[in-house]
Image 1 (tube, rainbow, N blue to C red):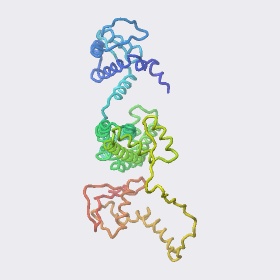
Image 2: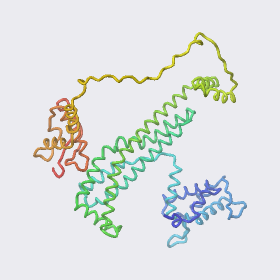
Image 3: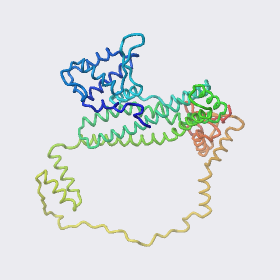
Image 4: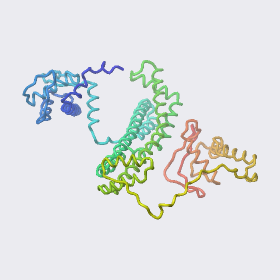
Length: 461
């Protein structure tokens, strides 16, 4: 990729010039006009710039003539600089003599980026997981001919979700760095209860609650797996892709569709680990921030308190380091070593001896599991809740029916309860022969409280 085949070589020169702050304000103004106006008139842009330049210094560039410049002259110089560096074109509106400025395509993206970087407010989090699930579900059940668009939308939302999660993770790391070495209580409180709380409320809490990844993970994987296994639907999607004139062949369209589906499936498999890392970082930050605030509120910041803390650290230091620490303290504080004799001066603390190698303890052979018992225990752990056992248990519950729910069954003991839990977990896997749909409410079965779940054989009713 050669960036400067797309943009001029001096495109970013405005952001490093001596008037960069004025240029950035002018870029923000240009972006605002672009958002609200279809055609940006030169006269209107100049008028807005004049308002920005009042009472502000403008240093002439090397290729500009020095001298007394009016605000209008400064505004026209800035506009000319935009044209020279490839940010905008000047042209006339069709069928008139009204002069307009047109931002370059690449400049539009950079303008938006600069405005986003200058925006201190935390961006709102969109319900990306629910949006992915709802579009896929609607396309599958109501509008299969739009499944191609739904898959592309799922890939786009998933890419944005991964970006948001990684940004959240590194945002928490940034707040970690802010509190390191910070001693001002007001700054710590503002960062924790204002800045960090805004980040948590707008991104972290929605991900953990209303847009829960764990809630929609299995349904999204199930729909996409069904799409991959439906050859007719895949053919319709390839034909739909060819209709938009984006691909040169049906095979290329098919590869892109499969790549998009695989990306979403793989991303959601990895997102669980990413959310776990965010949980740990969030917990660690909260604990560190609260501890730092408590410490600074309780610490004695007077000169007496600081000297007391220095002496306490000196007293706890190893003997070989005390001369070094004392030397460092003497550079800033006048202190002298003082020793005294008391009732314990002639007493020495006992030195702990190292543990010696002795005879190992005798083990009674009667306390050891017999070889037969050990094999039986291992076999029980390996096979009692194996995949085959789960399949046998579910087949027994299905019987001749294609579906059943927890309202229809009874438990005979702990094994049945554990088997049902394991079956519910395995229902989201690709090779599972049945689906599980969690409903609202729960039911008490022979002392066990379980949610209302409907199990359906794949391909069944």
